[in-house]
Length: 112
Length: 114
Image (tube, rainbow over all chains, first blue to last red; front, side, top):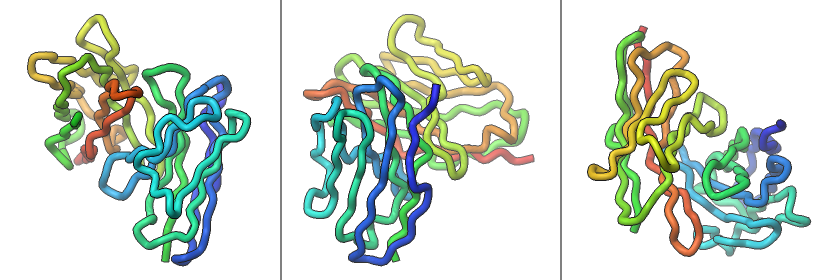
């Protein structure tokens, strides 16, 4: 069974530029999550999708972050414009039910 | 509000020695409990989980954790660590709050000394 795929693995941009991350969840998993993990901290949930609907986006900075999950499969997370404090690893996870979340390798974003 | 506390940010231990990584949570409702491991430059991987039943759960690589409801703890243990266990370990609790949410601890870095 293929795992959660993410791309790119690394991205370096300058502040005020825009960036997009892509995630392909495990086949059949209805729930998809985007997390932000700052160095030395646990993951912070940004947004949760159930199929193509948003379940929770309470911690998503909506003035600069956006996410979509068209057709209930792949998802993209966008930051526009990026700030220095957005430097982090962005993790995508998926789950079939209410328990185990399976994570992708993450995208390490550096904002200069 | 629900919270998960991992008391130790780093735990150094000699190879082949036992180790315990501590996790406490605050919740008055039923929870699911997880330990995830993150190896350097990799994503998070599920190590073990407690959903119901036996309070002692084990992983395939020798780790075990015990759910203690009275102490609201889910400590992770291994009787003999290897250099390959070097990683960061995260405790997480799944609780219902209008939606099932995973509440994460800050993580504990396990440092194996040769």
